Image (cartoon, rainbow, N blue to C red; front, side, top):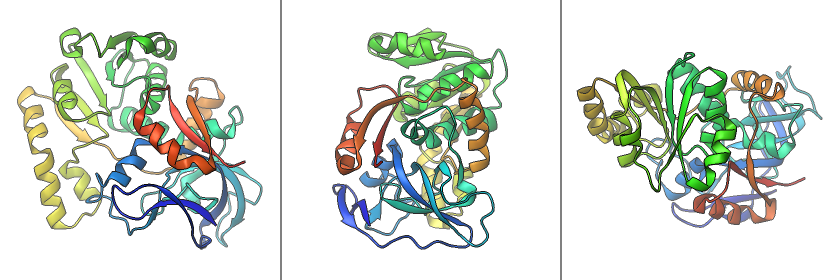
Length: 331
């Protein structure tokens, strides 16, 4: 079957013919009708996550999908051929930039009834990241103050909507041209990152969701109130992640060193830092589906490409300049 793979880190994404998936007892074979692209795809190709997400190359990229069930394993009970499903495939089994993929049934959920297939494919990774950051890790309560960076992007556009549903007061960073867009999503304060310094404008925040890393993350610590928390999805990974991921001792030492600077800065300020690499969860997707079908969360698809143009879509993702997500479709 056709798929899009890369052969070596930093190498180009290209079309290849790969074997048909093997369907295990608890697997669901899905014909991929649409696949969402994420920054994680580009970071994997660039080799940025090769220590913590080791994959054998060549690798078929793609984490998000929406499509139709073709076949189910012997022990699958929740899905049947013909069902329309969506999901974020778990680490170690990615490869949604392909015509078909076998997915563990626990990673899937029925597609929302109110979205297109492309819209459904745009949701899983970013919606699960927002859920796990704000609900699980952040325990966001009504009235708390949140800063969500890059509010017009794939993660930010969903996180703003979820945060407002949870009753939070939301600030976000965006370009001036995107200010109205993020306000429509629910942002209370919009910081134009080109002309304003969020560190000078904001203070006393309970939580920061940072997707940019580096200096942006360091500066984010300083707008938190004592006891506040910064959650980073671009790194650096922290010791808790290394333990939970079961990384070998040598890699765990390296990961601890990578995050030592930011953790020391956080401790000095009386705040905390956590790294989040979201996990696949069909159960949580069902909760997100309910919010989507109730009109509380609206998927944002900024650009679509045909399956044939998946490499071009990945280039567009890296270049940016659009609202929400990039999606490839193979109807």
